[in-house]
Image 1 (cartoon, rainbow, N blue to C red):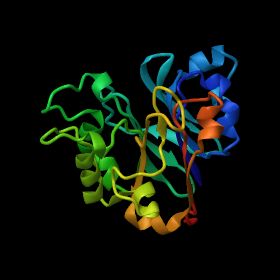
Image 2 (cartoon, rainbow, N blue to C red):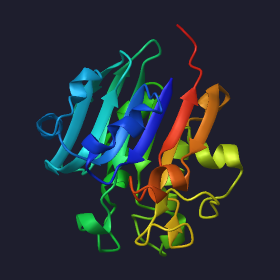
Image 3 (cartoon, helix red, strand yellow):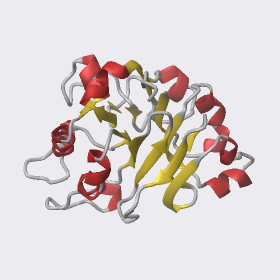
Image 4 (cartoon, rainbow, N blue to C red):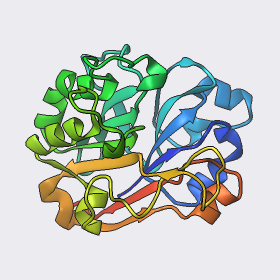
Length: 246
């Protein structure tokens, strides 16, 4: 199974060919329009299969697309005020839970030390989804330990430790052997969209620690293919899993 996590920076209808060229089974897409708007722009997202979307702005929300027969159902209870965190169940030969992430931190009004932020709160609200069976948490987190401040509840490392307590680990850091905050492969080319401009690693995927041996391949998209050609200011994370048949 191939999962792709990508902030498309809007206008997905013009970029779907690039996404589909990756042949994803499941794609978590930040900053995409809602399904109805995509249809109006000439793209039928339902032709791919199952689709879930959440957002307040029809032009710019969080979408999850299943392309190869897997069925997506929204987890209940669901807290839409946690923007944009979409919990769901993936019905596939090997079913699993998925928390899709496009975390709104400062842009979502998190400006005070005591505020947890949507993803940190979601890890408590959706703990049942994360503990009932295998689950994956991934997308655009908009966070890295390089911005952590003493005593702030929204700190990136707090979310990392909460997930590790639940048995989930960062795929990138586990496979690359790099520490949090010392990533050599950026996922976000901020402002100038240049290789030599400000770059950050703010997109993350966590999966169960005992699923690490099932990872066949993990890639961070290249600058030329995703940013240099104007598609987005983010590159995708591409996760290939050899999930055993039940």
